[in-house]
Image 1 (spheres, rainbow, N blue to C red):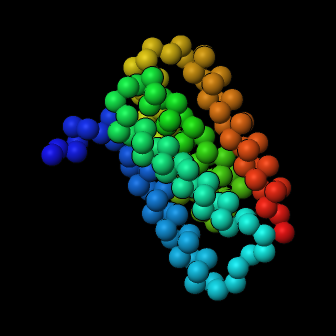
Image 2 (image 1 turned 135 degrees about the horizontal axis):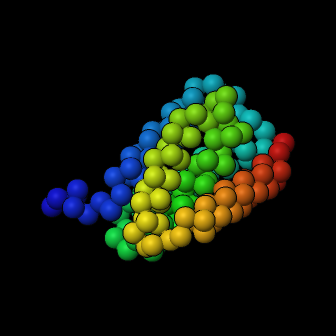
Length: 143
């Protein structure tokens, strides 16, 4: 079975695999430190990255461009939203993954025939919503 023929977005798949590697390294680092932060901040971050990995991974294999653009758009927005507050930790690698997943979303949006201005506005809205949900998660998981 040829997997390359089933992958609809190679950049998005690369971003998903990169985010998975970052998450595994992050979990390993937390375990090696031995000290657990109070509250549920670490599980929130692990779950958030996991959600983005699933969105990007499923989107990378989704053949319908109209569904792929939404899956990859939300995956990229989630990774980008987390990369900002985590810039001094895992933020920069997550930002690179977000760019790769976002490139897949842009490609899918072009296939769908989305107007550039509408696509830009929806992208900004997705990032704002993802950031707001993440900030709410941070507030709820504060020690």
